[in-house]
Amino acid sequence: MKLQKTFLFSLTTLLIVGCTAKTPYTNRSQMIFVSQKEELALGEKSYKDALSTSKVIVGTKDANRINNIGQRIAKVANRDDFNWEFNLVENDSQNAFCLPGGKVVVYTGILKVAKNDDQLATVISHEIAHALARHGAERMSASMVQQGIGVVGNIALGVTAPQYQNLFNQTYGIGSQVGVMLPYGRMQESEADEIGIYLMAQAGYDLNEALKFWDNMSQGKNETIEFFSTHPSSTTRINDIKALILKMKNNPTMLQKSSPTKENVNNLLGEKLY
Ligand SMILES: [Zn+2]
Image (cartoon, rainbow, N blue to C red; front, side, top):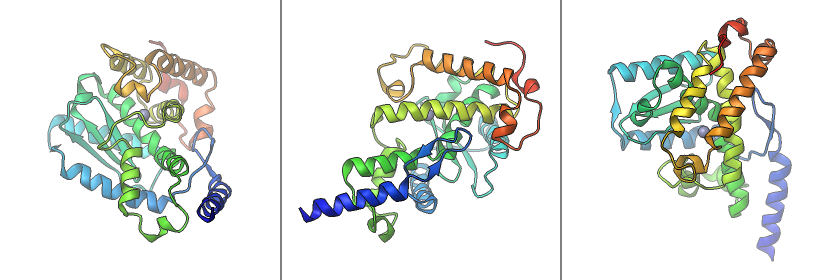
């Protein structure tokens, strides 16, 4: 009973304290109980662990491409507090991730579906968007509530305590199965698509290639498994992105409002829609 009361008290405190975050670009209210500092510390640790157990490819044409594209997108993301890094890792999975603080990992498997720089920019922008919107911290916070993990006080004791590191890895899909908290994932995926498109446009990439990239990703996939279990179906995703591009073409001020970039949006968007 006492424990239950304590938990309820913590939960209430969390709900009051935690509801203050807002996503950039989309301005959505978020329930986040993990501070940016804690998030960065957990990210650093997982990043080091992930790289130390992977084959990082350096100095090749593809590794340089990933870095150049990443830096170009990072520039428009306007996060001077991030210490950006872009790594190409030998792994057949068609996936990539961006950890808090701007640590981006792209798997070589993606190179088979991302046919050009604009398509690579699509996946990198999408992953960076997750980090900018603090989706991991949001998911982690939701997991804490769901699992009744004592957050208040405990997390202050040590952010690298195994239960938080495990939760972090689970949340970011590192070293564990995908498919935790599905509905939440899909909403965040759509948001990352939207923010990713803004980043691509601001960095001067061809948005039509985003449609082609997601179409390539869906080829030969059973949409009920793996990647797509936590992602919107390719048809929904492509239709949503197409609608967003059209909206941006019709409202050239959209980008200026969400970012300090002054470039002419119409030039960035191109003429043809895929
Ligand atoms: Zn995603």
